[in-house]
Image 1 (tube, rainbow, N blue to C red):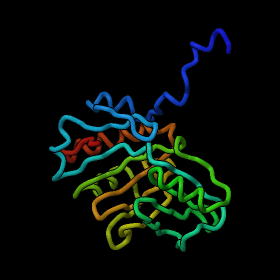
Image 2 (cartoon, rainbow, N blue to C red):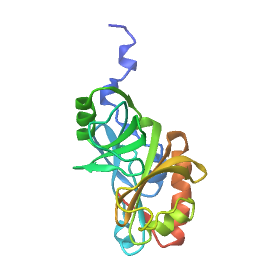
Image 3 (cartoon, one colour):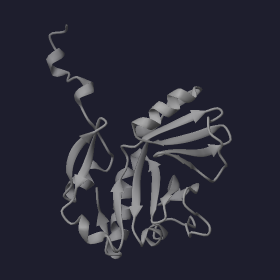
Image 4 (tube, one colour):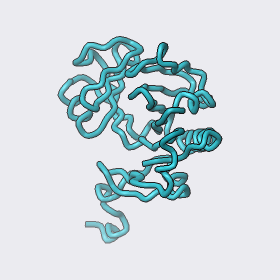
Length: 202
């Protein structure tokens, strides 16, 4: 063992942090470790946003790109929710798989080439009655229910940068952009949410 080994902490003991960690901390987040990530567990005023809109950092979600035939039947533009694991077709032979530890297990069982993009994308959930209105303040993708129902998946410009939008529930959207722009995305969303009476939640 090197005499300098004590200066090198075991990487397995260091929790990953979202690119939005600093903004979340400044907003009063209390953190806990989940699946190797420091995740916001609570905010002081989160209960105030239930009737308007809130947003939550979901950058810790597994984001795995499967190359080749997916093990489930998919249609471009529509994702499949398999008990919390979302199969999102990007092209006929590329699928973005989102979720928790079960997503990793599902992709491993599928075979084929897998690229782990978890740290490549920052993700935010927009939640509440005004989720569509919040998105419309910085994104031109049409997310009206008749155009983008639950499970609809769209690539496009999100806050003027390439990204994805997934409708995970009637009043909930998941948006993703490159990790390097995560802090920028938080600022854009937080500013728009404030004007709607909303704010961050865990």
